[in-house]
Structures are given as C-alpha cells and as structure tokens.
Length: 116
Length: 115
Image 1 (spheres, helix red, strand yellow):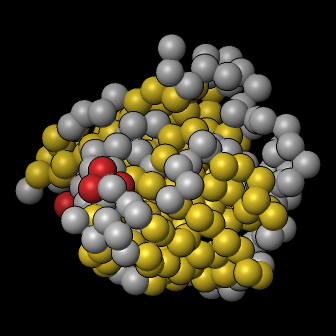
Image 2 (spheres, helix red, strand yellow):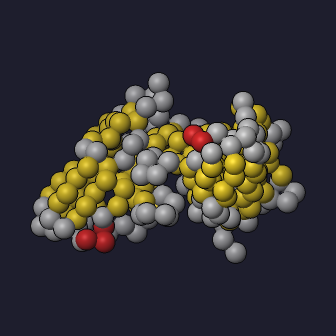
C-alpha cells in the first residue's frame, strides 16, 4: 500500500481563523514532509520530520506550525494566514535509509487552501 | 545555474508518437534521481526512479548520464492519458544523520498528446 491520505481536501478560511491539516501514512515510513505548491510551480519544501523530530524548517513563517504526534501522522496547524498563503499543501512520506539511498517520496492528494 | 533544469514546454505530440524529455542537474555529487508525473490540480505521482543502469517500465524508459549530468525520459507510443506535467527530481546529496532527503524539483515539462 503506497497511500498517503490528507484531510480535508479543500479548506476555506479567514485570516483570523485557526485550522489544521492532517496527513497519515501506514507504509512504515519514518520521514514525512510538508510542501506548498502554487499554480504552475513545482512543490516547495516547508518542513521535514525524521523519526518524529523536526529536521528541516525552510524558514517558514510561524503562522504555520507543524506537529508529528507519531510515526504515522503529520499535522500542519494554521493561524492568522494571509491570502498569499492560498495554495495546494502536499504531504509526502519516504523511507529514511540515508542520503545515499533511493528514498522515493510518496505524496498525498493535497489540501487546496483558500485564505480570504 | 539552476540546480535542476527542465524545458517547461509545452510539448504537443500526436498520439502514437515517441517523445523524450531531458533534465540537467548541476551538482555532480547527486545520488538519486526520479521522474514524477503531475496531472492538473493533482499531487505528483512517482513514475520512475532512475538508476545508473537505466530502467524501463512498459512504454517508459529512463536513462542517467552522470558524465554529462542529465537524466532523460522517453515515452513511446504516446497515449492521450500521458498528457501531464513531468517533474524531474534530484537528490543533490546533503549529508545528514536523519535519513531524510531534501530533494530538488525541476520546474516540470508539460506534455500534451493530441488525438
């Protein structure tokens, strides 16, 4: 099973709202990723968790707060977002066998976020 | 020079044609290479990992040329359903202890197969 699930599929929120995006995988992967993708652009890395620890934060604004409650789950908490944060938010997971290995990333279907 | 470069296209090809995409990378220490396919408003899906020996999966063939630092994807007998954006993804080898990989995406090449 190479499935990564994400909820919700679509989210519309105001600039003062607090919401969370959820991601789940049951492939036994120990690396999980959050990406942001704007139209006609490639995915842009936001955060990486490895063995449930935050390993990379790509200078993401603090209005985005990631959380990895366990090895299967990844959350992204949103607060006080701006309209320019509207995008497709993708979760991915991979094995974590070291940088010399082929650790293919598998993506979830994404959450399409609109900030009003 | 960008880390990973792709021709954004679009490549408009008739059904049944053979089409090839190239992707160049700048870091000679790059270790792993992938082609992903992304349909409009969908997530990227892994199409193929690209190994040093080259690999083939049905109508799709991927090659790696380390000397010239590029990877290629060949699609034979194009189908309408092959219309998508093809993303070249490279792991430029950033040593870390966590096992994760911070890969670099190309901008993607758009393919449109025409009836």
